[in-house]
Length: 242
Image 1 (cartoon, rainbow, N blue to C red):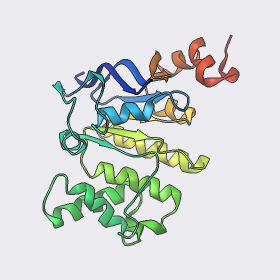
Image 2 (image 1 turned 90 degrees about the vertical axis):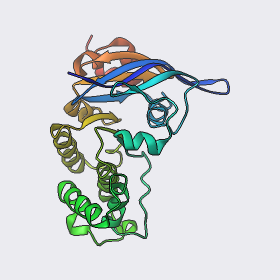
Image 3 (image 1 turned 30 degrees about the vertical axis):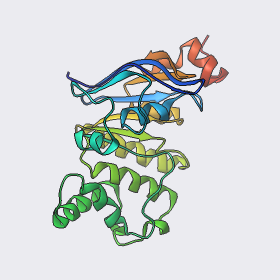
């Protein structure tokens, strides 16, 4: 299995705070990998380093065998990394279809092609009936789906999902999990930050745990949830199997 992403000694400091500390991890093509940890552990900061929104203090980001450290976000996107944002910010006065077309224009200059891409993705994520709805009129679950749809429209090889399940009820979470699994089955590699641990365990074969910017554990869901250090830092006593 070929390696799609590798982080090598990735570090970023904001003044005296080391937000990501010497992070080493990799993701293979086709995997679904979870990134978990307490609030402020450095998870979204790691995403921002991968996509070029932040530049690391030291260390490297390699994507499909190439060093992309220092690339700007639009360059990283064109290379094949898509991402969603924790706080969804659709173009409120544009329709659902138009929002998704914005993502599609990363790959084409043709409005017709962009519309075709948007149509296909709306069908996939269940937003086709809302194609003409202004984004600011969508419900929270619909906005979350639109956020994923915009990222999918850029035709990524690797999709970074930042808390796409936050604020959803159990039924909506179940539907979103099915959608993410289907995206992964179609060959898109997934890296996801999520606090809904049961959902992360249902989607991801491997989980990496951060605490204070450092990797404290890595393994399959069972290994991670029974790790004493992870229980202490993040999960709490209900996961203590001892």
